[in-house]
Image (tube, rainbow, N blue to C red; front, top):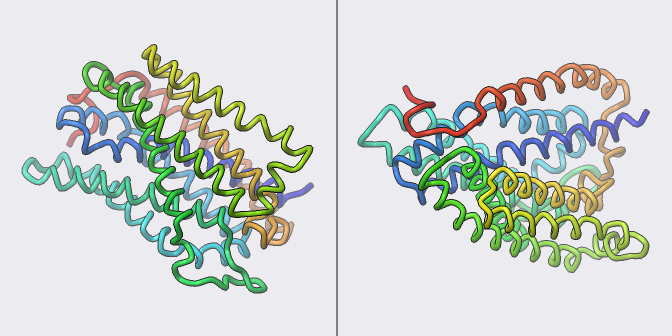
Length: 332
């Protein structure tokens, strides 16, 4: 069995689960300044029962990379120390805001801005990390050979902007599913604008990346790959059309599912662009993997833990299904 490939699939699944699940509550935080106090309470209550469970997938993905692909971890971490620290600080600010905004009246605006700022910082930092991986990391032998600020470039900044629009759209569609009344109606128009911004930025990244990287351009556009990979933009276009149609017809659940479809296609495009490298164009997943005995041992634990995580995540979403209001939910 190819244990390295199995573990690469498990970590990819964990990262995708984090992006989908934690993405919408980060997006809700980014939308916070556009909401009134009543709507802020409704938005907070829509994600309060599940937000910390969503971050389990981030721990699984990061911890799995450290344990299973230690060489990739040792090379990638120094390249993105600054955005990772910024992301963790943002997640801390957001988590503290959950606990404290209901404990004060006069100072609530401070925690509202902390919730917004932490969500924005974490989201933009994740975009910077993604952009850094896509543009490539300089490696000398088996260690990082780049500078302190290689993560900061026009491409990585634009990836940060694209991820920010994507998470905000996902958060808006989540609130469409979970809220009612004036807030829901206001969000339909806002989600339409966010859809245009997200599609525009993703389109720019999709064109910029092959122009910047010749190997990626060859992978996507060389025959016969171009025929096979045409499925990705075709399905993305179908999801975008259905998303716009769903927003016009005010069908929130379908709009949310179509947004998830766009994320799945974007993730598939990322995987196609970098596979089989964990450090793009430098270190493959087999070169970065720990010994097979370690992979087997860790896989035995993952086989037990992963279904448990999926089960309690699904159960929590089932228990807290349905619409929310501002006067019920996360209070002291």
